[in-house]
Image 1 (cartoon, one colour):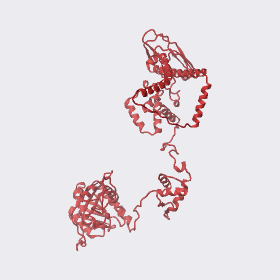
Image 2 (image 1 turned 90 degrees about the vertical axis):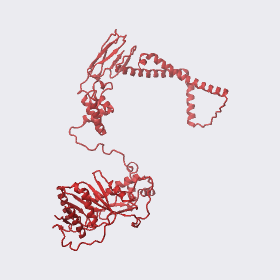
Image 3 (image 1 turned 180 degrees about the vertical axis):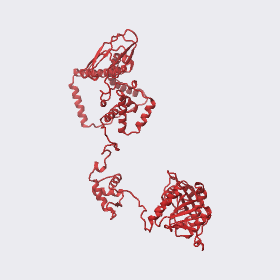
Image 4 (image 1 turned 135 degrees about the vertical axis):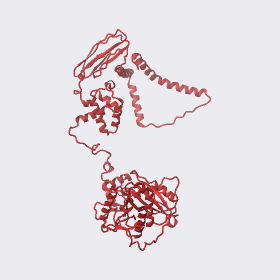
Length: 613
């Protein structure tokens, strides 16, 4: 770059001659290449044959070529010479403009081109500047130092009057360079920060690195915070930081945040024009933005056509006016639109139309109670009171129920990622299975832990009490070492039926063995889905075993022990190989000597098994 500036006349003329030489040499090169090709064919041992295919040119091309040839006949040599001179002037002007930019940028960076004479005149807002050596002066209060190794020419003093500096004059000192090293010191008087217009930014000749230099740690923290903001907040934050620094801060902040200076100026302008009593708005984008729906941009009547297709296949609840559903698929709706209205739309557009009219893909939920029993709500309130009482004193609260029975070797619903296809019998009859799986489950409400006892016999009251005993000796006695009582929430039927005296008999034996009081709180009939274990543990166990074909009890144990949630649910599993008999009878003297204490309030669903002292 320096050599170009030092010898700009020689380089300019050399480049112009090079362009003319290359332009004239192109035709000669083409002719020489053709001659070389002919000589190679003549003297080489191989011969080449070139065939040309006939091509038909369009009429407009032949007419255009005829116009060009006619224009060439009209033009004489004088006009051609004038055109060449014009092109030469344009080329020289372009080269002079490039050299001007290069030299000014070099001077601005502190470089000193020598043997350079330039005479430049420009009219900028009625300001005439005529110089031999121009030192570009930044509009900041700082000094510019240039070191010149060999000045052999006098530099004239120049008066520059500019409206940009509020008609204040700037003088470039006249120096008679007689030594090898001279320093040029110049200063300018600029506007104050209050006089500057915030929205206009600053000129390109400001070098922010010489004035502003934040600590690298501060810049890093500023970038981290800048990257977390939205687009609007980014430019406003950049504008505020630039306003703090004053003149020259726009370029520096733009270099720190890797954005354009226009972005910083726009953010500062928005802050400057923002009212004082502005309210917080959660919305970032303006209303009405984003991509418009298909039926708005293409066919406004598509919505009505969609309703005409769906209405005949729509059903609803006569008691609810706004509750409808349709049995048509997306493909069927699209096919009907094309058949009746010749409208071609994709299934994605059909999904958007269904959502717009509140048609959503839903699944039936089992929430309707088959029968409302007496004191139903009162028992729920009573259970809540007991849960609060036992939880506050740190005593265990256990939700108990038996999960759905499974069978070994039969099909189970669910999906898995496998490399090979899993093959099972085409019928899932129990007689085809290799065994039954009875997962009796307990869920600790306070600690969010589950305990499952896998049985392979029968779901009896004795099995339920053995499951409670196994949990107590393996976990409860350690987790609740100082507790003298426990609360068990269970359904009103099954192996722990509220009307079964056999369950009460086995429960009394359990209380006598472990030595703590056991309170039973049954849920009313037809409300088993409200038992906490039903929705806090069972769905996650089902998910952990989804799609797995159970082959052995050990495999079932491993799958169920993988149950976990983000809230900290864990499950421990034990296998019970004990055979439980059915059709057991209650002892004859149990009802007369029963130690079960029933509550005065809703005694059929609330009672306690008190151990012997």
